[in-house]
Length: 77
Image 1 (cartoon, rainbow, N blue to C red):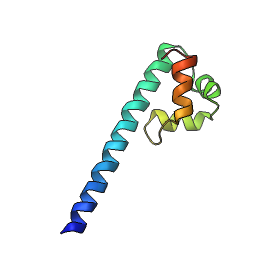
Image 2: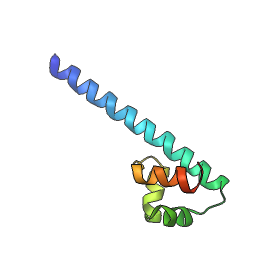
Image 3: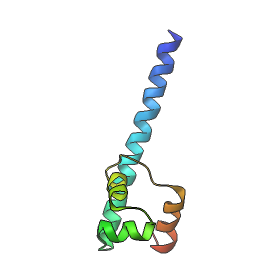
């Protein structure tokens, strides 16, 4: 019984993190479009590849603390 509870908690934590990544990615995409930047332009400012930014915008991976700071400081987000 205890193993099943741990598994459910682990799945719930993953789903929350995944959900947060999708929301964050959607917001980043919206901000990028409001700033009239292409994925390539924003990726270059963040020091990452266009494919990596695409994965961030779709919630497949998260944004590093370094890149969050760049968004806040350099782009006034």
